[in-house]
Image (cartoon, rainbow, N blue to C red; front, side):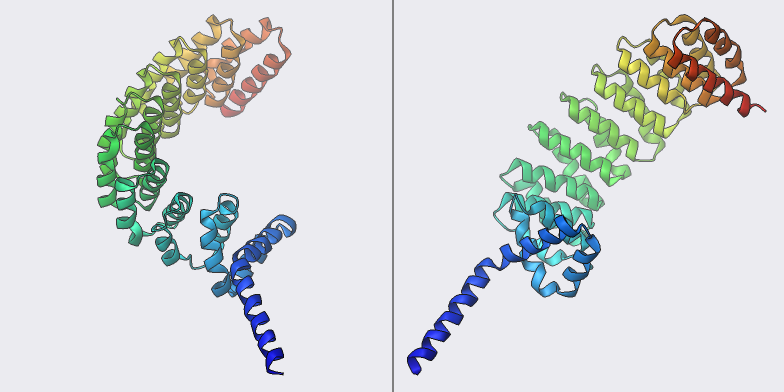
Length: 334
């Protein structure tokens, strides 16, 4: 009898040990099943929050698993309140994937209590991809002291670090980020300069405009296009003249993007320049956006040249576009 009881106890212990070993796998597979087949985030949210003590540990640990991390981050985003203490502990883990994902989630939740830990990783971690992700998380948290510290990394030798600094400074949306971002406009790396332009556009201060305008003269097309898009969003009157100059840019893509950006500026100088372009260009790729822009701006002085262009046009698609623009202008001036 005693031997039988002992065997049962040993079996139960083994079952418990096996469950402990497989618990994380079983829980993540269960959540994956709900996610993949039921496709109902509300069910996951309800179950995870009602049985938090069971789910939190396995889900946070799965941040370090490349195959499970996407699901893990999704589930954690549904937790209310978020498991910030567990995520901070995950920053101390040796697993680079876990540190990156934990940092991203702490940034998403703007957890200021994790700022010092993140700063330590941003400066000292041996893994470049971890440092990059951590720097970007710091930008999302937006702590001004931390922003000033990471801005010093803009001179780092690794361009990936400098790209992340540019992203983070833009995310922070702080006036303290303006000077570092302007400095990054002179960087040798194209992506650094492009993100610096984007970052300046995220900071709604008149001090950023001159820097963005300066980027219109960048030697690289993608940087110039980023500056064009940013100025279209900002709609600052100081941008009109330099944008009009870009209509003569040697790169056609730059000229096209400039035309589309100018439709945000209902300025007489813009209308006159676009009319001139309509009358002098023979390039369909240029004429089509010019016609659309004139219709959007709605200045009645564009009616005559549009009607003349319509009478000479033999392209059905362009004809429809011209007619649409003419009708828009007429409605705008009724």
